[in-house]
Image 1 (cartoon, rainbow, N blue to C red):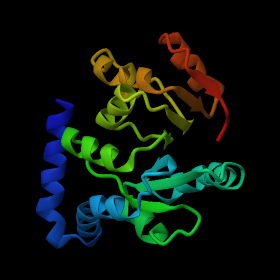
Image 2 (image 1 turned 120 degrees about the horizontal axis):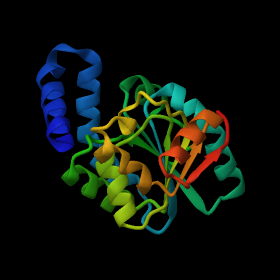
Image 3 (image 1 turned 30 degrees about the vertical axis):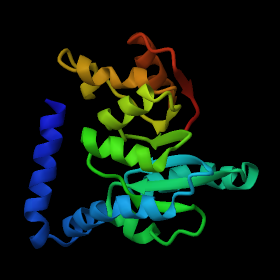
Image 4 (image 1 turned 60 degrees about the vertical axis):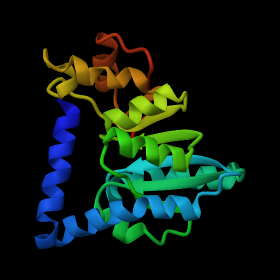
Length: 199
């Protein structure tokens, strides 16, 4: 069901892209993602991959990126965006080493992206739950973290029909949440990979 929904979503965006400036930027950006990775990823280096939706989430990741660049100079940083409003502002970011769009969460895209990027660590910010990416990282034994997360009882994970989606949370190496309510909710659901770290 999830994969069908992603395919329909991707098809719809391609369909409307000639008539919508932001969507057109996203679709064209996805086309360029693999070219960017092929030309800019240094296969002899270690990478920390940060994925953010847009600018707000980038600001939440920025302190961690700055610390890594300062204290772990042997690591390079790959930064991906979902939203054009984030990517178009930060595509020339000099703090990180590679910037590109995250392709749609389809299995063939995921495998191609990870084969090219070869991240050593993956860090997703806040509400970025891309099942195929997270699952493939887990299967490749690449540590994947969620930071600045917030969980609420009305989210899909905690609905009677949401067990398939709840499974994704087990694939994260660690869930760093903003508040005690999020921690309590997850622990009530049997999750032990939870730490309260704030926003």
